[in-house]
Image (cartoon, rainbow, N blue to C red):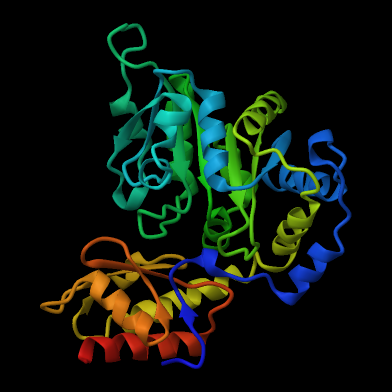
Length: 347
């Protein structure tokens, strides 16, 4: 058993640091719904500058950001084009159908990254009354279901051209956009220029306890506020949590490179454990996926064995495990986790 629990289940497991907690405690607050919370307003202005968008709205979660964006962009019966591994398909409780009454047209992109040619091949005849009207292309960067893959800017620009030529809007799920920017060296504003709307999450590698900001045009955000109200996302003195987001942007963005290095170190260590299989070069950012190949073992069995020994990881499928590095896990923790995983399999 470890001296402390090493939680590699997700980068959402981070706890606010002392500095972040002080920023939250000292936050100047007001009524967010009346645009009277100065800390929330500073965050909105910061995100507009970061992403090059006209306006932004602070929300409780990234899932709500996706759901609001789909509702604003689409009408009931419309179709959204996205990758088959996209979060809006796998992890939002059927939200696109329940909240926006839309259909999904899934693409099979390598590691969650599809191309403009794939979008073009998926386009339907806009003059046919027999098919769904296509309204939106949704991109997830990095691609969680694609093993944390970063979208090359040129690939995204290719998708953007095809979509705009076809009269479709574009949205980006930016849950780990910061990871994509740090890994690729691409400016967030350059990614954002490819889409009409996008959001940035503060609760993944950036280490804040809650919140995401959705950005787009003034008209888009005006309508997003209506849906925020409708879906119960309006808050009051939310400067307390906006202060955590601002602290995260100031202190935790550049350090994501450390998480990427630790993930590569973890991947290389897993490759040396008998009974596991991993494609090390495939792991680009802070998400590490590997297969349990030892006879008689499943992902769930290994997860339970590691948890008993003080390490948290997650079963992604019957044989696949996901481990995620973040700011609350250091290199020594990775060494300890590798020992636990190896010992568990050898027991």
